[in-house]
Image (cartoon, rainbow, N blue to C red):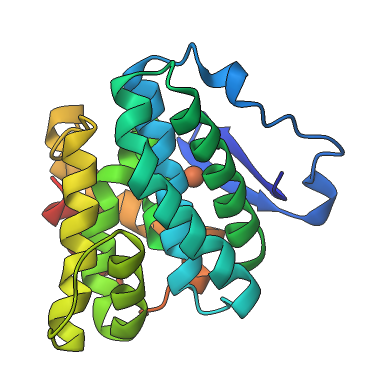
Length: 238
Ligand SMILES: [Fe+2]
């Protein structure tokens, strides 16, 4: 339901985003019955992709109250239902809530755009043909750890939406709870701990970092990153 399209140039291994309202589908069928047969790993990866859409939209530099409300509800629904959908793909309540969640996350990022998680994950996809959702899930806590100082209050909201108790904590400590909750969800649903497991090599990080900085998704990231920053985030996610 979004205006985002992704295309891979296989000759230079660059995966690019095309963002234009003309790409918006006329009709999108979002029926949880069609998702029942997805295996657990695909459910986990696509669910974590949806979480990434919501988190990146929520901390985007062009977020609005409209995208915020969609993003926060998506984060809440994913936190409450992704584990159940992975554990039992025939749990229709979990599938139904996940279908709403990914749609809401789509509404959020369709208007607020994304950030460095997607900009960097696109490069991993283009370079190694790795699954998008898994790349996002691994990168998400590392990129948001980098972004945290740009908008700590936003991360407190994310922690609360993920069901974390932040009472009595400073903004900075409460913001950290969002990162911990993301990592816990990721590991609960079986996402690999790092990029090394997926075969990512340190010698490729520079070129991927350069390409990530040109990716359209990087433009709305809340913290400005240098090439060294982007390479450093890749390294921390190895
Ligand atoms: Fe995505």
